[in-house]
Length: 526
Image: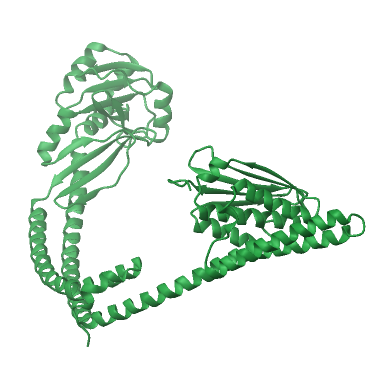
């Protein structure tokens, strides 16, 4: 069994055992903590409800008891401010009430007394009548500059009306201001932190570790939230339990990490590091990185030796494939196009033998000269040399000679706009490729597009970062999406890619074809 497999099995088994034990421990702790938190939250929620009931105990008895009073009913019919001050205003402090209003049966204010300047009744008469139509004992909250105002109301009825069945003779409304001092006092009594959230904020009660937070919406008379009451309580018992659980988990994790770390270091030094060396060598196609591993004489060393041998074989095969591909492109774009053009030139000369023997002879001489140059190119291909058309002539002269040869095949006009300083900024390989591409595009335009005019432009691009070559014709064009691609278009793209250039071919039926290439500038013009 190999070292890699042994460590993989051992590490995997220990990892599974460690994760299983840790997961079981954490699951048990989580279940126990969840149950404790749920119990605490239920108790705290019940406590909050009871606390709110007790907190409102002063408002409700005052509103319900004082509203069922013959003297107050008589006051509504015949208001006596002195009687109200004695019987209502002086009772506010005893019930911890900050404001009291007495309204007529149509909700018109009759009397108001306050312990703090809370302002007029926050509801209009029409709103109050709408409210008490469905709720004879309303209880709601309204926003106030100092906090929140809690309001309770009750219908004014005779003392003998214990069932509250007679029509209201007016309304008694009382209010208590929930300000920061009030919340602080309530928080001290309940051993909690109490505060308001922003108006309109919503949420649910939650608990996190050693803190329990309860949220209670305070709604207005329409049922919309005025403010959110937050009650936060600390839970020291749960905090201590969490601390203990965390300590135990840390001890368990440290032990597991020490064991796993020792195994990981061994695995890294004996297996992972050699495998990384092999992978890096494969990614970079560089066999020199395998030398230290080969010298170790391990199982992985034999693999590294075989990889080194395969690199040598791949490099040799790659050179052969690239040479064959280069030769195929050069033969297609140079020799084949020249021979095809020569055939077209001979055909054109044949038609002129009877009508114009001198012109026919001239064209035959041009074809023969072109064939001799093609023969030289073939010899250069055989010996591994580049075509020599650009060695002894300028780029403009080479292109001009190319179009003079194409003119022997028919009435084709070549318009040249070549900046020789731009061609000098290209390496010889790029200029040779540019000439081959011009030959391919011109041949396609004449053979397939029936073009009579071909325009060639070579100049430094506007961004001064590349040399732009553009070949356009007035041929019939074609649909790039549906056209059957031959070697010519692929060769153009491949030549551009090999030289680090970009190629774009655009064509439209009836509007000719345009081929645009951008060659990178040479740092040292040749």
